[in-house]
Length: 127
Image (cartoon, rainbow, N blue to C red):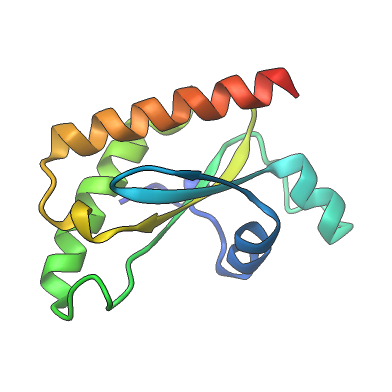
């Protein structure tokens, strides 16, 4: 599980989901928005957002069994926990899981997260 300082608050999930940019992979869809943009849109500071924040969405459409969804969520959460400090510009990210993540091994998830975060870093540098 991510430390509380790295978790995206629930009230910001709709904002990031609607206004954020999207990256699609075979295991998940990533929506992200820089924290400076969030502060501008909310017209208030959420605190010092020097860290990137993450949230995970696992729908019941993936599997009706909570045990299966939670196992996949723990694998994804651990992969993100290791990679999150590598995000250069603090951002809010949401991972929407796809069905393929349920059967994916941890190493495959880790590689996919690393690849996606590198793309995210490249995009934020170009802006």
